[in-house]
Image 1 (spheres, rainbow over the protein chains, first blue to last red):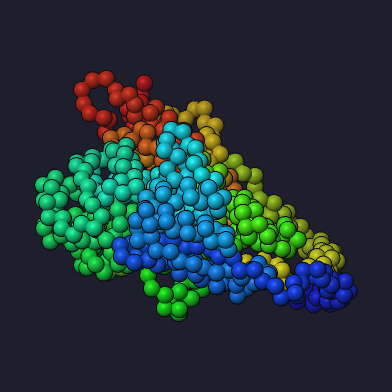
Image 2: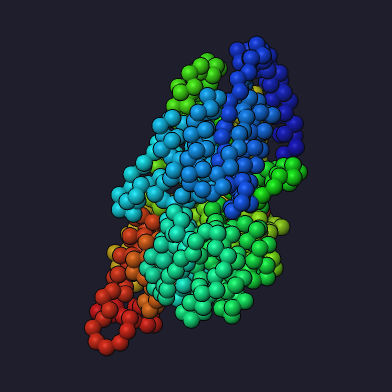
Length: 413
Length: 224
């Protein structure tokens, strides 16, 4: 009976479709851009591409590259070819600022992706704001960048041109504290940071939240970026009897620290933030990293169907670096800029505005209105320029690889 | 993103395939229709089927005619349940006679796309808190739909509970035809404040007399 219904419906439907199809063919008429003129627009990407932090920095560069390639291949903006120009900030704030000046000085540039480090971003924000050019970081997590210095008491957005697709350390530090206290049942922690904007900020938020939960911060200490010998620090950690070491900083130092700490007989896990979520951490720290933990933004890529082809492309192209931490977020940041250009062009009768300053300002407005499904989930920004996608994962090193042990989604409203 | 999530693959759809009524949500229309259908005599059912077929044929022709099959959104069967499920806090549920060691909280749970998701609230981060949806501990939200549910949280042990944690968590197991995931939904704002109010009522101030912060059943600490 069901089959006969389907057949009858199909017959009627086929007739109806035949009739209606005749009238819908010529609806596309006006959208052809057959004059062959194309405009090349540049998107700058800034990250550490050499030296410290470059594993994750390269993941940002090539994540952006794949987004640009996809947009050009699919002719996402008819009449526009996008070009990616990469800048190496070497994780140095001053270099980042110089790069921002170079990007804004390029009269074909419509926006920028990056940087990796929150401390570098602080020196770049004003430059982009003065040029009214959009900047989207796929990895900055320090809350001050979007919510101002007094973010804990009175949020105020410092720059309308700055956005990010990564969620903030307010959430990351709290998520880590919860997992340390309730998941791992750790009650006393030794907290170390690298004195940088990101590391010190994250360690502070973790400490505050861990104490709120009832845990005890038995001691705090600091290292310098680039340090290699942590002998005296290891002695302090060992004597403190802490059952966990929390580290705010990057993998370059934390990989050495965990190795020296365990070689020194302090056999407690090291727990850090997204700055140490990289394959390089495990490679550099070796077997000593087993059982260590890190929080990272987003959820595992293998649970994101849209990221599958991105990962395949990244691997097939043989790109260097680690896409794991921020590659998909860089792709989404770049795509947000490209889609904003498309919105501006569509609203301008299909033409790119001839005044680059006008184009840049309008792109900022359109990025603020972003609302699309990216690789990492929904891409949209709140009134501070923060992503509305607030997902996090705790990873633990198990048999020489990062394994997700807890995921979470936040609603902070 | 190089890791594998805290997930378990699922090879079969929901075992029972049922949809449950949670909280104050109204019974489903489909349930009521199924009940009435079963009560009809066979001849009436045949007539109804014939009339229904004629109606369906007409409706089918109308619906199919203007629609372009290529523009229809395919059902995203590859969606992982935690990635498509959203929780929004609606506020305190009315429980005038509830003891001060227990609170009821209303949420809207949405499954943005993909197949139905079955959820079970398993906890609220702390060992001293128990949480579950009421009246049933497990409920299903159809893909593309939102359901309002009530979560009851009770204090079982004050000894290690922070009264003002800032963020509060609901630990949830989610299951669809693709995977089973254990996931935390993290709340600031109103839910965090409302739960902190409950914790203060249940565990603060520390009762007069010797001894540390109360240990054991919180309800026994609030007998007055």
